[in-house]
Image (cartoon, rainbow, N blue to C red):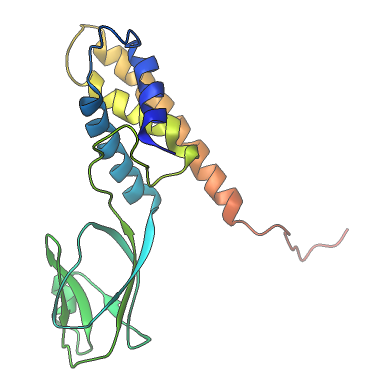
Length: 194
């Protein structure tokens, strides 16, 4: 799915469809959509990538939203908060701020593997591909629309914001249900026999 599809939904919500006299530029809309996309990547733990790195004590990895798994030479490597990591007698990965990560008690190794959700860079063009699937299109547009309503252009914005914030909550619930259905077992086993 490309950004143009979400822009069309967002322009419809904004009632900004007159191509000759647009109130919002594509750039403004792309900024809001980028922000919403990264929020959903973090919240729904989407856009999963695996990094194979040469292990060293200090590592730089950009744009990690959530780390699912770390291994050092195919053995689990704990990922902890800095205060817990510094107390650990075992090699432990911690976030040192920004895009910097540190392996405390690092004693060497061959391969560091990190599986994580990754934030996307800012969208620059309506033809840019989104990291999220089609099921997120409406939610992205609603999230961007709610952000735009925070700019006071009308005395009715607070009431409109509340309505669309609730619509966004419902859309996120639909996405959660869809993801849960996709991850659920197709057969349910029970100890009760009829």
